[in-house]
Amino acid sequence: MYGEKDGVLLAHPSIVLEATRQIRKAIIEISKEVESKRDRESKESTLYNYIKSQEFTRTLENLYGIHQLMAQLQDKEEKAHERLWRERKELQSKINQTYMTVSNAVESILQEKPPMAELIQVDTQEEAQTPKQLPVPLIIKRRKKKTTQDEDTASD
View 1 (tube, helix red, strand yellow):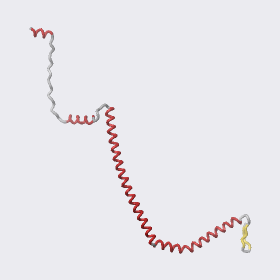
View 2 (tube, helix red, strand yellow; view 1 turned 90 degrees about the vertical axis):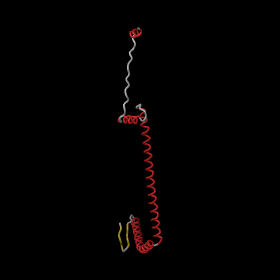
View 3 (cartoon, one colour; view 1 turned 180 degrees about the vertical axis):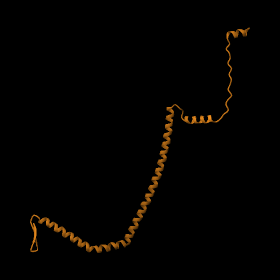
View 4 (cartoon, rainbow, N blue to C red; view 1 turned 45 degrees about the horizontal axis):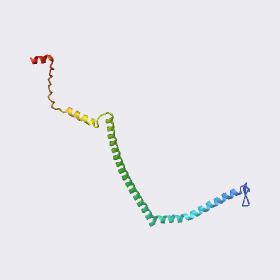
C-alpha cells in the first residue's frame, strides 16, 4: 500500500488522502512545539516581570479588600439571621402561649367548669390546709305541732 523508491514516498491512491492529512497534522504540531520553545523564555520573562509589577500588587490588594468586604457581609448576614431566629422563636413562644390559653378555655367549656377552675380548686385546697376557727354550730329546737288535744287543754 505504501513504500519508498529512490527517496520518494509511494502510496496506493486509496490511502493517499488520509496519509496526507496525517502528515499535515504532524507538521503543524511540530511547528507549534518549535514556536512554543522559542516563546517559552520570553513568556517566562514577561510573566516574572508582571508578578513583580505594581499592577499585580494592586490587583492582589484589591482582591484582598474584596475578600474583607465579603467576610464583613457574611458576619452581618449571620447576625441578621441570629436576630431573625431569636425574634421568630419569641413569636413561636407567643403562639404557643395563645394556643394554650384558647385550648384551656375550650377545655373548660367542654368540661363545664368555669375558666380558671383549676386555680379556684388550688385556692380552696390551700384554704383547707390552713387551720381556721370553726363556727359554733347552731342548735335548732323543733316545735311541736299543736294537736287538737293540746288546744283543748290549753283552753281549759
